[in-house]
Image 1 (tube, helix red, strand yellow):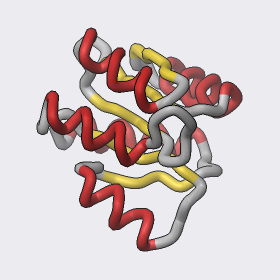
Image 2 (tube, rainbow, N blue to C red):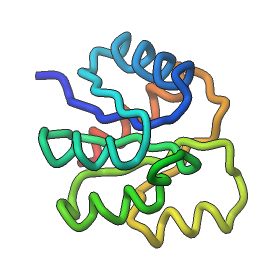
Image 3 (cartoon, rainbow, N blue to C red):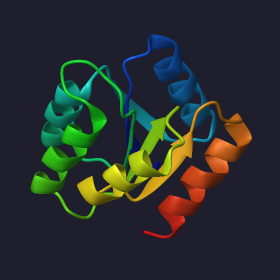
Image 4 (cartoon, helix red, strand yellow):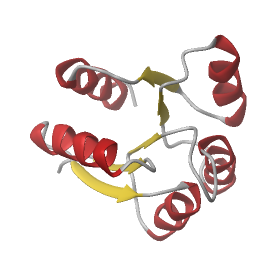
Length: 121
């Protein structure tokens, strides 16, 4: 059975790219447009991994990660953002993120990282 991944990003272009890349890799993907929608979809479903942007309207990625950690402390969460500063990485780790991928990324590299994370679970 394919891993089910929740991808949360406010950019429709980025959501589509992440979905297309993950589906090419054989994963099942559910999309959300902002952090609150991500929390709602997570609470209603079962996911093996979450990929979340940090800077989003309605609810940012850091707040979303904190809310999801209240519901489940085990699901891996990877932040996907243009923010490469160490302070942003630290905020993500403190909120409960397990890893960091900086945009833009190469699809093959992205899939390798996702595969490794899921294998390490």
